[in-house]
Image (cartoon, rainbow, N blue to C red; front, side):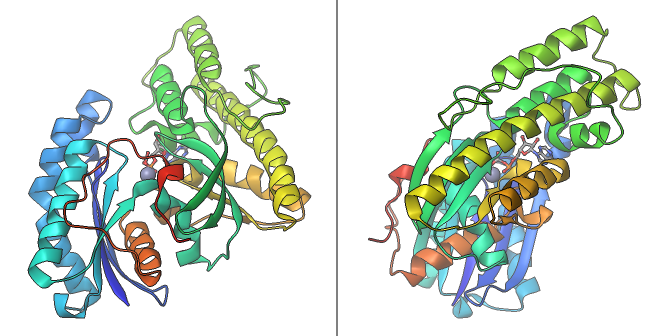
Length: 347
Ligand code: KG4
Ligand code: ZN
């Protein structure tokens, strides 16, 4: 089975061709970084227009690189939410048009399910597993029991982790996008020089909160006379390292607790999986590896390139759904909000 995947829910225009043999035949990502950089964040209108300008030619390139024609494709999968709705519309309309013209199944993929199932494409991980989903807009712990079957164990009460990275980076004067530049600045910073809070650590629930940490960064940054547009500055590096260490402690504590609950509930030692853009962070991956090992399981994280938004994960989620006989009608309406627990899955 071969599926074309399309991703346009944020600031990456992406197209990929993937097989049910877990082969990625092509995986193209066109970043809009330079278009949004002057504004310090993603501008939805600019994003939607840019997707519209580039998607058709990107799909043609993805097909050419995969070396196949539409007659060899078994389905067209596109992100149908959650995300910036203008961009989602562009991807969904394009996918529906190809599906209608070629008489192919259309698959409306939940972007979060794309992140959630990526490790089945890259590592062939079996259900069930515990998933820490950390991206720009989401921070959740989920028990993944099957395709379309997600049980939420906890989530953030305020900011998502990626959002906390992006906002803290801005307070330090680090270049957009914040996550990767903060990780870089933290590399040779001293994580112990500043004492930052670890919200929720030790609590019995499995929730997160990052707004207090962000506020603490704001106060420290203010005291130090930041933001400075100088990633080499020692105060910037030390505060970045302190922030990343605090996030690491919070994620480690929450995952330790979640693994104990998950293993108790299922009676199985399924792996800990981390996915979403923040999963690209090497320091956090190292922390979570240690947590998994202590709980006598392993951490599975997709390769860095498949942590941030891409269309291979959308094509794969499409393959998983198609294999179960699922498909979506051509009048499926894109959804700006679409929690994973609302997914229609297999029985
Ligand atoms: O999954 P993603 O590409 O888009 C969403 O679905 O949100 O995640 C983007 C988020 C951004 O907040 C970005 O700053 C963060 O992931 N991110 C990182 C790193 N790379 C991307 N955060 C920390 N360290 C990184 N290396
Ligand atoms: Zn994402």
